[in-house]
Length: 230
Image (cartoon, rainbow, N blue to C red; front, top):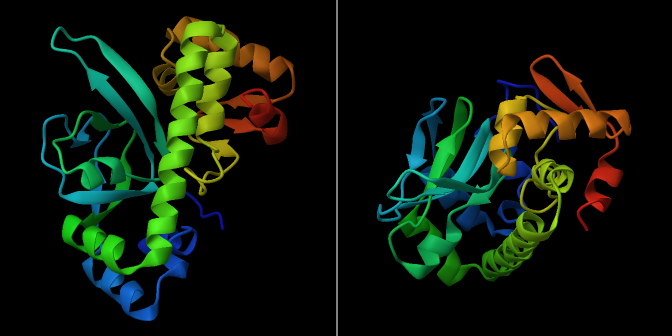
């Protein structure tokens, strides 16, 4: 189900999530009772490295990046988090301080599920455990691909992979073919300069895979985009 910008709700997020419909009625009600929403301004952090984890997160709307910044100011982006994404389960399961920052690339709305509710679902709902196992496996597979891309592949492939990541059918199931994302944001997610990213996007446009528009990018051939990174 796709929703127009500004209209997405917590119910929309839960309805399109793989884990929520599989819960029993009592568990669904507890999630509905405990879940709340937070607005994250552009450039602000949802959570930061070193903080104790207290929530599991779901992106209702907007775009965030998952990144690590060194003490000397150097930064590496691990990936983007678009509408429909649920994230943060690894840190909750490990029970250690966060090792990365989650920063909003644009004004974003995020669902917060308390740690206590997450742990209760993990302990009582077998379907939720199945979801977490699949989620972690999919994320690990994607990170391995990113590692390969940044060491072996060219700029076009890195940009293509960053775009395709926002349409991952399991990790980001709520993405619309039209991404309200700037070329600067794509460059940030790709880990390349804005100039190199712009050139790569123009080549992808010339190949009929996407259209560059004012205020966003529309993917016109998602099948080919995904095939390029498989």
